[in-house]
Image (cartoon, rainbow, N blue to C red):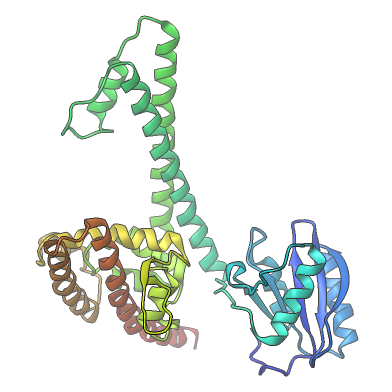
Length: 385
């Protein structure tokens, strides 16, 4: 991305991007109203021709573009930045809106984006590079398959229970013994036997997909540029390679945040607030930002309900981690395990306690990444040299 100073752009261009078309509005520096330029086809060659025309119109000066984050991804962003211009992909939920607005069209949206871009009122989202996006898509594909697995298992359990069968309480499900029991169930009606087998086959099929994608993820991990940071994060209790990979794939270089508080707010783990005058009122967490990373953090936080200790499992898990990361992980254990015990003894709901632990865990993750990223960058710089 170009680093031109604010106000040094020749024009500010708002784009309302859709699958087939892009609505374009241009705002010139100053106070004049933006001008709507119509629509262009969302195709590579036509976008290139349009950029060439803009370059001629503005004598090759740097332009600033923006469009809303959405299903069309970051291909347009990379094309605009590759052409030498600046571009922001903005968060739709943070775009200022007037209370009286009741008409929404592509033309109005493009004009609004151009106007707000020139005023500096838009909030840009972090855009991953191609490698980062590929790893993120891989982790999200596994997460999608995991969701399908949970749904298929629930459907199978519900079907069996409706017909008066249930697996004994306390015995582990989805083992070979469990599947043998399921397949041994017999019904008087032959079509119900077919239904049961189809449900069982569906569970087994989606489980194989989850396993295959997990293996692909582990095979891709050693070649990822952030693999050393994954090894460092694994030193934390409750964070395995899969969890660390998901967090870094979703968030990228966490050290770009100035403080852990900013990262906590980005993940939606800070309390909402509605205060006025001398009254301060806080509510539930904001739930803004990246839901995939937030859910993984809450899952990791459950491990801190046990007393702090250095077990053989934790030592083996953290074998590849640097000593600094191990020291931070031990501080995290002492702090978070004690915090969990303190909050539960005070009568707090365990789910709320777990969210509070996840919020504090973010600070230790940020600290480890902040320690490891400079070393990683220095290593990659020396390798490139």
